[in-house]
Length: 289
Image (tube, rainbow, N blue to C red):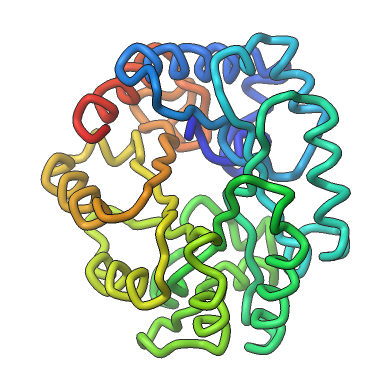
């Protein structure tokens, strides 16, 4: 998967790229690099959030869709989006109407910020709505975010109270206990995939794999951060993460600009040299695909 939520303000700085030309160049170079290394590997345009057919049209006009095989979307109607849960088929149809590529739902979830039963019922209803409409659906997420951590790439000041919902998206609590939705998830896998991001040298990796087995997951989405690629010891951590996930059908998201590579020093900045991101993608494909 090429980038994550590129049309979201917290993941790509549109002010530095108002016409999306920089992102289009990055995505095309990455798509070409991946195809060169692994011609049969599926290339996914990073999950769009918000779900916006205008962005897809822009990517078509700029030639990006010629270098990917799937368009993916993200949706959280019970937490952050301003549309009802039952509108999922309509939202998918909006994207399907402007591209002939398959459309995946690479993140969909419900927090337990309000109550456990909201997540449980939301999971069941989401599966009912999306079954048969999208070839791949990944539930976000497996694990709650530890409360002592920040919600990476999100801003408390900008998001207000909704920021705290990020900590309650898992079906497994921070203390390792299962929420009611965990049992429901196990009833819907392996057809329903699971999304779980890992931080650099994340202590939760082994527990996450154990839970993925317990809920009978097959399709797993995670990420390898270009920013982490610049850290000392990246080889050991990336190798450990990918080895731990080897038994699953994994979609790996490549994203996040290292400070030293960006036009401005932050993860959401367009890189000065987009071919450097393509080189990262190619290196990861050679190492793991």
